[in-house]
Image (cartoon, rainbow, N blue to C red):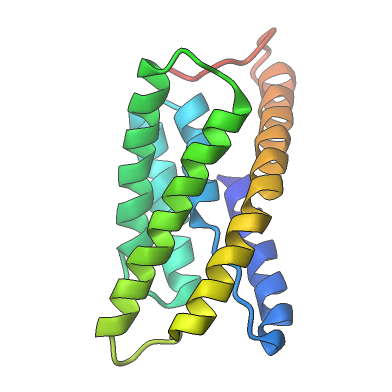
Length: 169
C-alpha cells in the first residue's frame, strides 16, 4: 500500500514536469497485480480500493472510477494467478500492459462524455500518451515487481519473523 502511494506520487510529480511537453503518463495497471501475487482477496480489495481512490483524487476522475476498475482487475488477476501455473514475469507484465491499455480506452471513452474534466484527450494526444505510457510501462512494471518483492521480504523477515514470504492467505 505504501509503495503504491509512493509510486503514484512519483508518477504524478513526473507528469507535472513533462506536461509542458504535452505528455501524460498513465499507468494505473501497476497497482493491482502485486496485490494479486501476495495478498488474500479481502486484503487485496482493501488495498485496491484505497489505491484507486487515491488515483481518482489525483486525476480528478469520477470518484470510484479507478477504485472500481482496480478492484475488478485485482480479482481477475488473483483468479488468473490461481489458474495459471506459468510464473514467468514477462507473462505477468504483458497481462498488466493489456489491462493498462484497457484503462486508457475506458478513460478516453469516459472523457468524451464528461464536460467538467481535467483530462481531455484529443485523438492525437491520446495516441501519443498511449504509446509513451505503453513503452514506459514495461520497465517500470519490472522495477516495481522487484522493489515490492524486496520490501515485502524485508517486512516478512524483519518484522513478521518469517523465513520466506510467499503469500498472505
